[in-house]
Image (cartoon, rainbow, N blue to C red; front, side, top):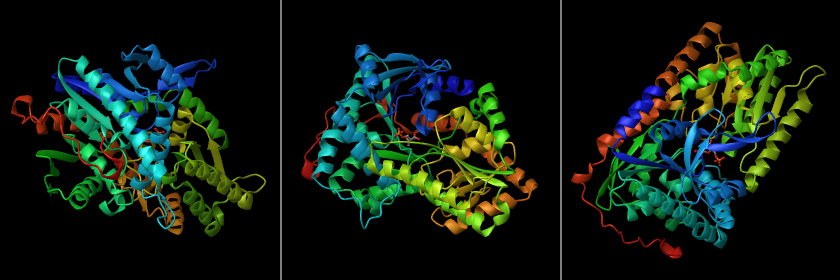
Length: 520
Ligand code: F6P
């Protein structure tokens, strides 16, 4: 990361950078002596942004997600707080501390069930969603409210600096932030990156018009909107055109809104390859690997995931069951190891999904186990060393999401695996645009085709397996997180007008009429 740190500093020397994301860059975790300490947060967003935030010394505006983080905010006296993690990374965190009810409505009613489900096509539309007054209330009192608090904090941080503010806001939690910030800071450079898929204009119409218009109006106040894949960029521009009636240029990847040009660009997120390789060689990972070697069979099928509905874990188990039924010769010779973490347990759909995942694994095990063999090894735990040890050991990595913005498991797995492991990959994972040519592609809904793909992976000639793995590793090495960051910074430098050339927007914009729920 050293070269990118210097490069980042140089490119950003005229800016005052601020990151805004729901998740802070750190989590609390107990150490060996059961004392709480800060560790780097998990998930793709934190992985991608940590390097940038550290290289630039950007303040990271984040939600205080619980009482403890709320206390950190109270203790910081409104100043950004310097947090150092166990592995010596330093971040400046500026907490947004919403009232608990507002946070709950924002995170557990709007962001995760509603926006996450829209953007991953997760509903069975004949039955869900059922929107009612409680949804409108959650929008007003939760989503809007928390977005306002974020924008206020970003503006406060921006005003502390002397240089031109550069606000990098992230994801589906904060779609209203660019507009709210633009109203206060007409000359700031605003970039918003969306980590999850952007669905078709038609699917957005599941949401009431005022909500989807407010989302688009919020986002289109940015100078640049970043997305993961070509198809996300296209869907975004089509949404501007079809749902908002805006002129767009699909070749130039621009939309025109309120007299401004907005760039819509693809930046596939990635991992810090060198750091990941280093961590794969650490004593903790090697210890975990020795333990795995004690029980691993001839062939290991592996998956690591949050228990999110979009990850398609249940169909993955069904496909494996079909593999074992169609090819009993694999019994005792293969184990499907699923290392899963509970997530978003305040959302009923997620609780129910976690229950279903465990139940299906149990049923398959009870049907097919023998005295000395269990077909599925289900571990519900969050243990990075163990997860990475699994990456080194798999023969087949199953990544079969229904839809996924990128999916860093695929990139992490093939980076450190040295067994020539095969990747069975959903055509609807963002990473398929980069790795699909050498992976075994599946339609994630087709369990027989997925079983067949597992069979092909298990039987693939080792020379071919190694050659494919090598190709994929080279792609990730080349498109690593440093490239993700530098591509964005170059666009900020090349596409955004310098201060002097700008036609300033009025310092205070008029608010848009946004339908039945009034204005912001
Ligand atoms: O972009 C999706 C994302 O924010 C990822 O970065 C991360 O893997 C996941 O969602 C985490 O979600 P949450 O913060 O709700 O646990």
